[in-house]
Image (cartoon, rainbow, N blue to C red; front, side, top):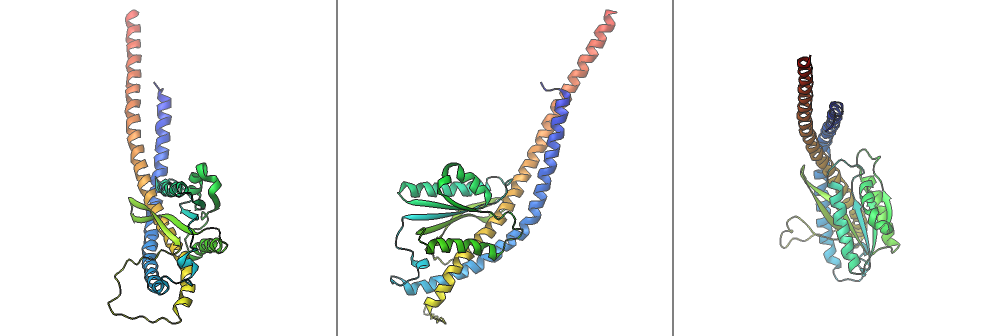
Length: 292
């Protein structure tokens, strides 16, 4: 059994840890609101761009001169998997759930004989995947020093993806991230970036409506398709930022409560041990007095 001094040190250590987890929970709660508002504000833009691209893409259905970002290379041999996670921990299973979904997808592709390349965005995903898939990782982009996510940060990642595609380094690109639903729910999501996976989430245009585009559809697509890659990455990073804070808030709340329960248990053990020690000393004193 541990001594009284060891129990006191253990209780003091758990109390210090509880203060840290409570502070981390408060910080995450303060950051969550702004991150959630940013993620929700980005959704309508990304969805509307998706709807416009769907309308324009119908013009190039079955045509051989369709933009490569829309039609792809015509092959399916090499896949680029972009895994977006956080750069910091203390957020429960947030990072591991994204990495797990990506790993399962990669293993399925390799089982079908595909070549897989991994681009990690965020340190935690890189740390998880490099244990078993270090050879497939082509680069790791850290956003640790970014205090507030901006479109420029996402566009730099999008530019790298577009450059790799232009150089023929992959045929299909899929982005993995966590879509924010609530403080306790972040859903690992796979989104195909190249070729563009166009799926409008809003109602179809009114029957008989005719849209005219200026300039022509090809010119508009040449501008929108590259931008769409960056927009989808930006939206995913904002979803991740909100999800990370929500997961961190939940994990730190659980850790704080667990620390409280551990303090209560250790205090009970300490009091019992102290009572037993006092009783033993009293017995020794009484026994000695009777011996005299």
